[in-house]
Image (tube, rainbow, N blue to C red; front, top):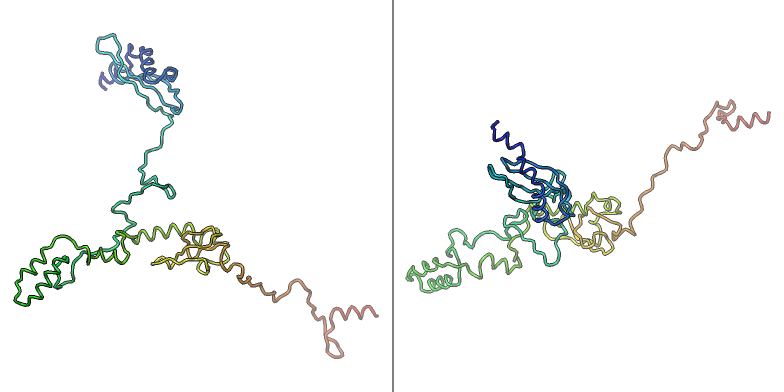
Length: 317
């Protein structure tokens, strides 16, 4: 271990004694009465010392004012280096910062809030695919525009003697057309969405909906029948209609919610006319009543004498 390291562990005497200088600097940075008792002094290097004071500021429990002082070599005057508020070992600290995309939870959005979606969001995929390219061996150019279509019509009208420059000019078009492209056709069909749910997005949504309004919920376990037989169920469109629908019963806890077909509640449309559960049949062997057993056959007619007959005979003798 070097001598400089050994000296740095021992606070400089003049710097360690400059407690009043450090306190005045802390009170100037904070406010009088906010700086508490002197806690400790730490040597940061040769003739460099940091004084720690308690912080009495509300909301900063466990924090300390750190005032660093120093002096030049062979000098007797201690000067101020810096003043800063630092957390102590048991300081009350704010939680670690988390990006907004990870902090956001369902229900956090309010009126006027905007939630941007990433371009590579796994929950979405393009609503339509492919370019404005014709089929293989097509007579149409790669990009169809009103201009090149007019050129092609002009070339056909001119006949076989027409110069090939008309078709060549048709292939040298630049901008995509407003009509006849996949984008314009999709817009005419009502498919104006640039992106739609991907398979991952469908599965993620189905898992959320089934967890909230699925067959494993306590409400569904106590329901008289599932939603698939309820008249208030509005089926969905697309592939999810095989497993989910929308509840339209205003008295149901799932009104206006997407519910699983296996979900159910007491507001089932046929709850009042549901058949009663069948009663169990009476046991074949009645263990509560007594059974009569023969003791011995009658000597006259071969009839069986029961216990009751024998008791009557014994009473008349």
